[in-house]
Length: 238
Image 1: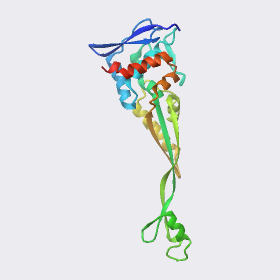
Image 2: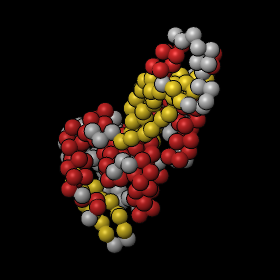
Image 3: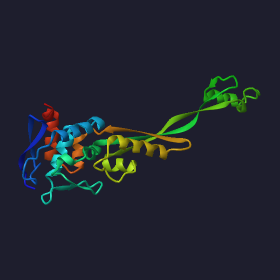
Image 4: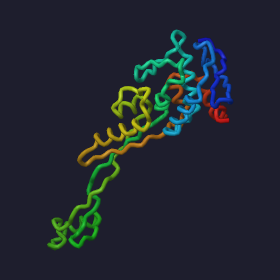
């Protein structure tokens, strides 16, 4: 696509309009769409929930709007959903935000971490080994009660939208999906995965390598650099 420089106009408040210059952003749209105050607030809300900067989210969606010269749609490549980015105000910002998230799963195993004698005193496993060799009927192994605890076993990460949605048992990020409901699905999946002597806990964090994520979802290096520069300059937060 031939590079063009087109003004991206974002309405943050009724009387405040900020103009950002990006390369190749709106070439396919033939204009400069205005983002409503409600839409901007929606992006800010998702940013508050996920920790992904709202300006990066909205500029990313604006960029994706310009990458289809035929019908102004963009296939996410992850869920086979096609969104109409002409109507930026109708998008679910969470769909883009998920690309910037990392889910970390920690597996813990229930093991014996010590013992308790007949007097209720805690005994370490090392001391228990010594006691086990004793012939004293009071301190034989049968007189010790094992104490169980959860210890770290392993961890695994799931990066980006496709992996996180799959973990949650979802096939797509619908326009009505909220971060709160997604977290419930993630936590439930972790609980169901565990059982017996194994349990799983999950946390979600932001992938701070924004540039890498932008490249990974199809933003051109030039546009990605412009988005990061705008974010670093705080252009949309003035």
